[in-house]
Image (cartoon, rainbow, N blue to C red):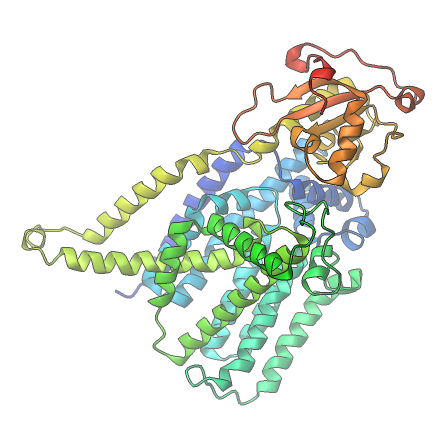
Length: 540
């Protein structure tokens, strides 16, 4: 049955309402903003204060998402505090997470047809990792929103061949690039696809002006992306980008960013093997094992009856290939690859998984209707029944992951920050590698960016450290052990360490350098506020 325009609008509206409810529920239960959210909110604060050089030009992150945080905080009237910035970051991310429904539906429809568009969209949001990423204070929701529009315009161009679609693609792609440097990937993938299509029989098309098409793509993308490139002097200032592109050497064996230290003598083959394993683990988290299986089914059974359809799937193949290569290099050079880094391939695979569900459900329904007692039942519609059963089974198995509050593992840092805000005067600095405690305490802090200043001579009176950082093998862990060795443990958060919640400790230092700084030693409060504990029993 062919759907009308109003049918699509109705489906998109229902999906948007469901996604809004889901993301609002997850944001309402969120406890701590993400670690990267600390950078985005700090950049947004500079932008709101008119510090254009620090907020737009001199920042590590691209400016689109911080600009939106600053705009939301100003328009809604949120206070210029840690909690105000946190709420603005969550609201900006959630807004794009909801708007992402529209281009996701468009892309799923372009690839898999009308009957699979709504379920492909629903499958993307049905994975707990998706709503966690889109509801958190991360740039992924903004990036994916622009990226998906760029992908939709690219698919439309490959179907119809009208160069006007390239302008829309360039604008949306530039929006993605203004958010994250990998936004240029869609422009590169489309350019490669255009060059490959005349070479393959299944995708061959008569491009009468191939040079002009590529020129429009390059010039429009370059012009809209040029302000960010000129402001930084390069495509991206993040070290990871330079290492992925081969412009810098890989991270040191014990670098802070590595998930685990690189053992001496590790071969190149072992490094890439670990990268492949880490990528697969991250992708499986972002799609689930069931989603990956259904995605394979959906891709195998995807419609490719025409050359236009073959060209569209060629683009998807190029995008997936580039993503896999980039993420493997990310882990091989930086030592990490998280589920949030796989959101582009995960979104495409989950759309395919939705199509896989549609195809398998239709075939199962056809087989069921062969039984005479089912055919005789008037009004029986097996496909909706199958969808309902699958939905109930999925909700039951994934309920625990959906219910887990965002930022729960870092709750101890927020509690420590609240405690410190009551015990130290404004302006007094804190040694806090994570940055969470100093953010919520609204006090200056020494984090990883100032690791070279975190020495026994540092004048900060309080040290906030996660228990794991006192036993880890990294160099900074040894530095934290050294500082904690000459300090009194005055508080531990949370009081009862729950599953997946890090134990965060607050130490009051008693070194001569701290005493000479003129700070008066505070009197810790009750155990609820962080009762003093025998420091000798907890030192490593």
